Length: 99
Image (tube, rainbow, N blue to C red; front, side):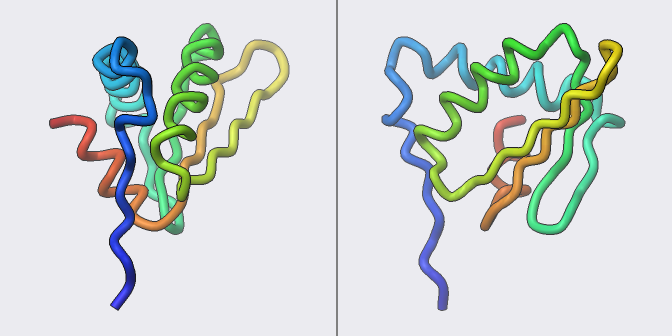
């Protein structure tokens, strides 16, 4: 039996939590067609103008979910960003943000 992976939401400052989860929903799940399953996680296509939002999301998410890994591809010529989030339970945890 494996240990449960639990995110420590209290690692995100209390005054930033609601904004963090609202940002996550708008950033990652605004267009379900831009979400793809990959081995042990999800990949998201993100508009290039949301780069600062992606950085802010990753910064807070790394505080509470230390078991997740983040990879961000930034193509040339203002192309669509690709954010890959992987790790134990990543798919379930990220989809739970929709609730």
